[in-house]
Image (cartoon, rainbow, N blue to C red; front, side, top):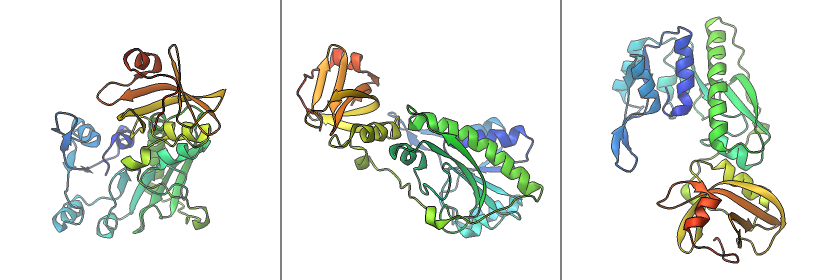
Length: 301
């Protein structure tokens, strides 16, 4: 059970190691992109490439859907980046249901663990497999693997690294369960930290914070959903920045010099390396300055 690109390596790895997957469950097709054409999820596309049966329930609480899952007689359900399963589903398999989460649980429970780990300046994160229970992300832990967060890593690059690490951990977890050697252990609730869903309004940059905090915020939201600021009523998405040793002025005040762009934070200036004007493509600061009118002393809001 899974939907986005993050789940694809786990599905492919289980198939490569000859595990029998009688069915894949994913989200319904929906309109995507500018043309709003109906498109399938990455997990569905991968499943169809391998001629797997695909279920796309609108509701996970539909009794008919539960009956369809029972008819498959699954030994195990593997969940990677999917919806919250009701108990009547995750209790169906004889060996239980496991989930892959993109953090070292119980840290960063929630919908956006990759983003929040970077936003909070963590040097390390990882992946965790655990048995599903009714409360989200609270089940007994099975396996974990740590992954370093490089100083320039963003949410996109860390996502890809964790997807591959997660696939390996899912395979190892399935093998342990198959062999009867799994050793689940409870989570330490004293170590819990949240990773709530990030909404559009949460993505506005606050230039009155220290440069390191703004830098981490931007890379933690890059490339999606993307941190943004405004200039002259236009939305500018900021994707990549670099810390500088230049002293700060008024927070949000812009510095323009030839083909470089910087913005003052509360303690120093932050160089803007890649950004995107609404309606335009993502580009370097030099490309942006060649086609956009902005002068030193103006402000990002």
